[in-house]
Length: 134
Ligand code: SF4
Image 1 (cartoon, rainbow, N blue to C red):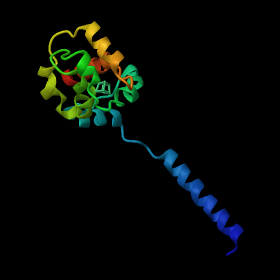
Image 2 (image 1 turned 45 degrees about the vertical axis):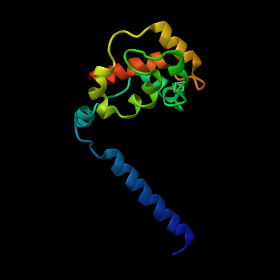
Image 3 (image 1 turned 180 degrees about the vertical axis):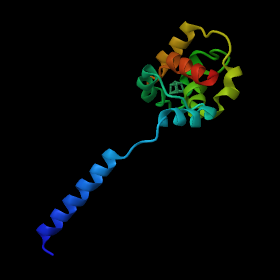
Image 4 (image 1 turned 180 degrees about the horizontal axis):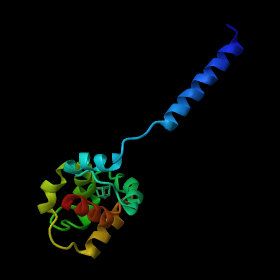
């Protein structure tokens, strides 16, 4: 078989594959079933603002500088917000009692300002609260 004939057969096979793929019916309610599957583990869809926030929120190097500026925020060390609480969504509800009261906005802003990698601590706290309470 010539090389050109092989290319023609390959193109035909690929075209059939694409056609089948596009015509294949997807099971109904796939998104709903996906959400139900992950809901017990508190793996929820993120909001648009959380998606925007996540790269910066994940940049924590656990240096502890924010904890030097604000020892406690809402009952926990600010350095634990991104370094610990944001890393294990399924266990967040168990930590919900750690996040109590309203944080000092000024304290949290000062802690965030001290962060060398720019972790947005107020946004991280809001995200953790939402995920923990879900
Ligand atoms: S200062 Fe920033 S990088 Fe350091 S522990 Fe706090 S949040 Fe993490």
